[in-house]
Image (cartoon, rainbow, N blue to C red; front, side, top):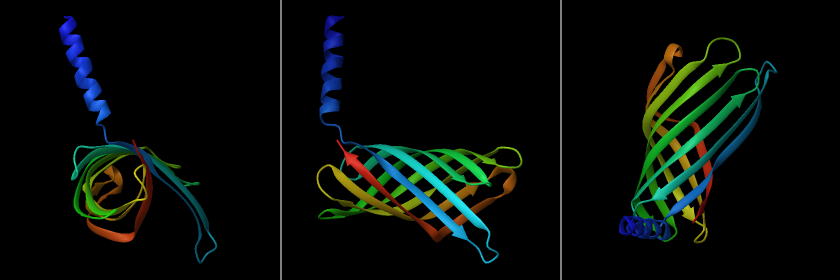
Length: 168
């Protein structure tokens, strides 16, 4: 029994010592006014954690919260697999294949389950060995908003996000 525990401890130490973990995420804030002088305030926060399996593959997940004042609140969980298909110096180009599941709560009405499956392309720049900035643009896939409808296809409209990661 002692040998089993020692072996497990050695394996765990090896995995942790060679870990390529990162934490980070993104956040956003916007305030808009339309032609009729209606004002809207929105906020989102998307903490993220990931593990680099090798130079090309990464797995991770995002836990997100989004709200628009007097309109809705939404909580999401989005695990993903990232494939990096081009690296040039400190720059890399990747695509995240993700499954997003969440709860959409409008100010008026019932909660709605939302989910989506798709690909988000992105670019990353390694500032140094510990810090990386990444940007995603667009979404190619399917999204379902339960009673509110669904959408599928390529969306590049107003769909740019930035993240900052700390690499361990």
